[in-house]
Amino acid sequence: MRGLAAVARATAAPVPATLLAFAALSGASAQAGVGQPSPWQISLQTPVTEVAHAMHDFHNLLLWIIGLIVAFVAVLLLIVVYRFNEKVNPNPSRFSHNSLLEVAWTVVPVLILVVIAVPSFKLLRQQLVIPPSDITVKVTAHQWYWTYDYPEDQGGFGFDSNYIPEDQLQEGQPRLLAVDNELVLPVNKTVRVQVTAADVIHAFALPSFGLKIDAIPGRLNETWFRAEREGVYYGQCSLICGQNHAFMPIAIRIVSEERYAEWLAEAKTRFAAGDGAVRLAASR
Image (tube, rainbow, N blue to C red):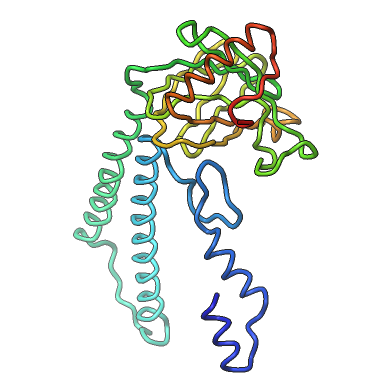
């Protein structure tokens, strides 16, 4: 942005305001935030789990492969347009096939698919094979909110999580993502997430964790994550589950083990007393 402004002053020809604005936005906000999307975002959200890192690596590999294929095909098209148009080549040669070329355009795509398949199957195994877990949490989807249940070894309580309307948001809370009760979990712990639904099909999705799993009535699906850093991470139901689909966010607060133990003791007491509207660690 400074460079553009300097050029404008030196040439006495002001750079259009829209160009300056775009330069500022692209420089400051092009990278995704941690745990939530950013304005003008052009990349994936910052990964904070092992699976999310693997997903990003696989995504970047595919981008390179796709880019090289597109560039190669574009060059071939330009060569064909230049060398075999009617003006340059009025008397084209006539032949029906070329064995070497046919073998090449069969073998090369197969090799590309093999290169893609190896990390793809590895990533699929990471997602589906759940390691021994430290904590298990049950997630139940409703129209249009989430219910989180902790097992007996974590206190044996549960609570509902609803989005906060725009007119009730506090400073720093993102619109359509902030919730009244966050799911609180410790950092660097393997969490098994059991997902189901009470009415229609939903989807539990959290980009920074690399999570997306269907919540289906009468069925219990499982996934897992191990968060590497503390913070609040947002997601949403990613299936069109009804008219309030856009008002069904997910918020997971990752805290230290000490803070988690404190919150757990507080939450057990409050929920045992029937206080279903307890505010979690976000207010502290």
